[in-house]
Length: 349
Image (cartoon, rainbow, N blue to C red; front, side, top):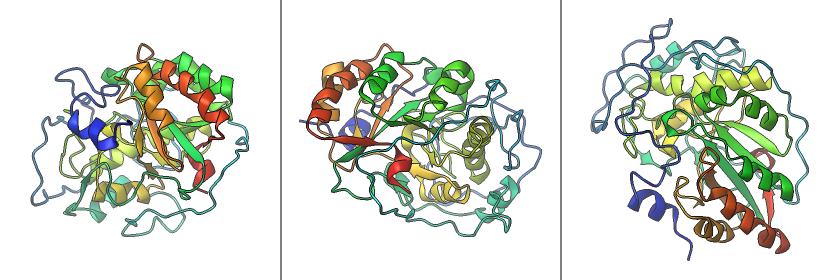
């Protein structure tokens, strides 16, 4: 029987996202504050104290600066800017396109540019979240048309102490079967794998998505998940999203459409900030590899049991895990049974 998302992620807290979990006592790097100083946000009421609190918001400056202002990014960037070709056709592309249930409180600037860090911190100063976790307003966990036979495979690459490896066997299995996928890449993983990034970004089978700047849960009150300290205020939420958004925009030549935070945890104020920045948050309905901790046979069973219209999460930064072997074992039978696979952008038009 397939394990539910809550069984894998809640009952096994601390290990279920081991594919992206830091080593004990690891903290986000301390960086100089952004040049655009935000107004201080008063603490919201009822906010629990984070298990670990980073000493400062990460705010490195990208070497190539797109339209985002005050957008931090890790220092090292690949030297080339790939231009992915057109998306491959797929058998099932649901036509409906839902909007996030938590709309941003104000529109972006009149020119259509994303809001600045100062604008975000001012807009959400004192905002009190009412929801926290995996399924909160603004998180997409299934495809628009749940009756379709399509499934979206998504793979996270977390970087840093969460692991900057590359599961080449997993990508080879996807390519061998012509199965598209959405790849959520953290800024630190990109910096550690510039050549691999260019190769993946140039392959129309894959869609590149934003997995954050230093892999933090998104909270405006410092909520933590699986021992990973979350962002502490709207400015830090902005930094976590916008840093890698700026990096990917410069590398790809266009902004990525989808975002997933470290641990996939959010509060409902953070999801509104993501929407303000033009990012759609991808949750999931099936956890196929338990954070790269499950053996290959169980990965195969979880993937085989994924419901039509589902979004599957797994990891591509732990090559020694059972993920690649489990996916490679599951795909032939699923394809023979008529199951189709889509990238997120193929389903959410």
